[in-house]
Image (cartoon, rainbow, N blue to C red):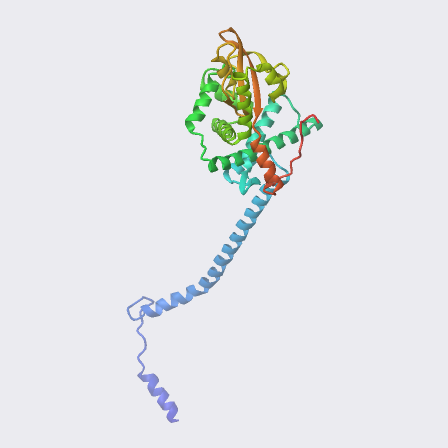
Length: 354
């Protein structure tokens, strides 16, 4: 009974909360804040879990897409060996390898640049059908040439670095200017660019890159092929000091299969003929009967003898040619030692008509 009386007394003495009519006051702000927060908590934790799940799913999708993209690209390059424009552009952006030579990767884009150019020329200028049996054989042959050239260019760059040999932009530009002045290509750069695009499907920068590789190879081979230069020096001495007949030496020593049978005589040639080795220009500057000094060509050493000058635009000369051999020898040694690895399968074909 006392307990009930005490409870009634305490309840009677309690002051009821003021009636605010639902308004927020200083006395009720804390209570209202807690009520609002409590209402929001039921949305907070599920949202956290949803964001976490979205993040995980996004990562999985991106990962699978990336793997699929690179997987498809790898199959296109190393399985199907695609040569289309997209794959070429991709290899220019992503430096994937096509081979490895003495520890240096050979860029797939370098291989495709050479191969695509050959395919374009043969299909547009010689109407080669690459879906025929002969066309497929021609394609295999061009693949072999393009891969060998890409490997050689990479190794030449390595040798150039080891021997402090360089080719400047000025040298490349001078070579291009010489080509532009050739009667075969026109007299201005616009025509020249059109010819390069039409015949080789190259941009001007791609063409200049090819010229750079060509000039660098010439410098490196001319310096490192000591045996070839010594052999040509002996031939030159036999002509100038020994009094031996140039034609007889050409038949005995020259490696040019076509001209050696005629004692090195190449016949009458227009001085504006395309001349990457520079032998026509040298021959045109000689006196009739005079023999040049050793010429470092793109593909080997040359000696030329001016035979006649029929008119101002044409000359007749003979030549002796000894090819550069040191590069092929070094690459053969690397292959024997297992230091030359090709990442795609390309057939070995001596000629496309075999």
